[in-house]
Image (cartoon, rainbow, N blue to C red; front, top):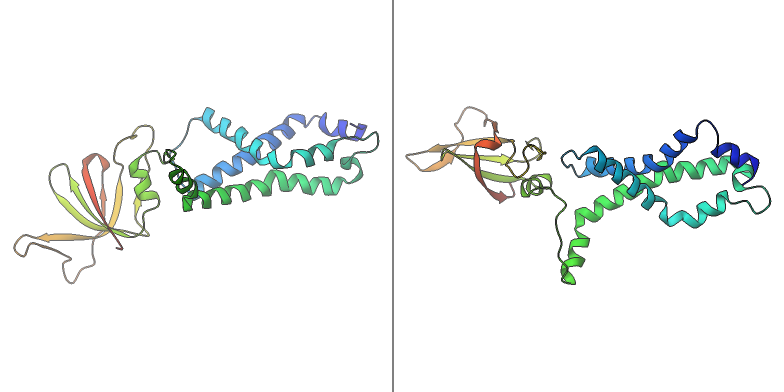
Length: 221
């Protein structure tokens, strides 16, 4: 490498440069995926490992180009000859390309194309959702829910935009989490049907996951 490149890579900002190169792309990909497809919090060690893995995958298609950019053919390098273009390329690789990868990976997950391909060839496929509860409520469209509590009481309500179901975490793994639903109906024991009292808006309800026994779904709420 020529002196300009050596100065660039051996300056007092070397540590900061390495952090930017090897952590920021993975950080962007990981957090964009979590924003589009929420999951419960992972351990710090696993997050760091994912950051590094995603960053390496981010650069993998461009390894030959990166080598040519910093290689010195006994002359001046691309970095010293074209610092502005080099900076724009670095910005693309470190900040823009990871966002593109994150969005593409989200749509791949959303369309379940990998699952379809695996099923077509008879390979086993495991969901990346932590629990069945997470899978149901992360991607759940509007639906009516009939929730049976542990005391035998039943609650009929609607799950749609504005409702929420908390994701599993390390403490609630394998257990039903809290849920908030709207348009909660009352049960008419005489007429044996569900109804909303006239003259008043349908109530909303928060239910503790610890008190839920099971839930039935009717799509199209």
